[in-house]
Figure 1 (cartoon, rainbow, N blue to C red):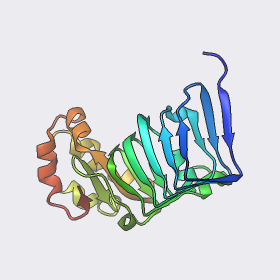
Figure 2: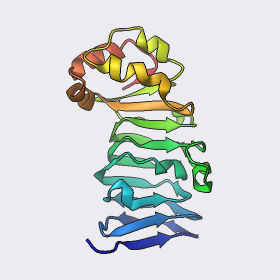
Figure 3: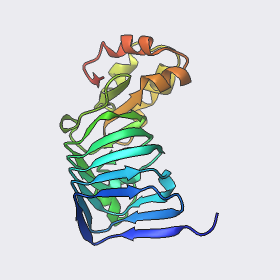
Length: 210
């Protein structure tokens, strides 16, 4: 592979456009001082090709065409009234300024966003009000206020290795973590259980939505 092309978009507002981030030979830098409003944003690049440097997305729809893995830079974006479709794994959203002491990381926020058509696993929502968000439905499930409820969640027996791997580590997530979403399908394969056995336990808790 030759040199990657830098695509830098900053200091403007874009409205009512289809905004494609799909060129595998490009590095995308969105921001600073960039606002996208009522846009359809198509993502089809790996996490390392996408850099958010303080950008506002207002009433946008994200179509994630290639699974986006281990992407923390959503916390450099302000997300308001947005909808997500596609698969996202290990992503962080919201306000987490302590992650890095850099200007872009102070600007993150999320509210009034809809993930009901997305498939999330090991995704965290930081420094936000989860009541303003719509989370994905079963087989995804979401812990609300997981750190404060960690002791209560550890008290019951979870199937397979879910207790050891997930529940015993809830209290170790960063303090701004307000919600945490997993895919029961993925956990069942990875942690030696079934989605039915996972659901039988989560049904006991009002701090888990699915």
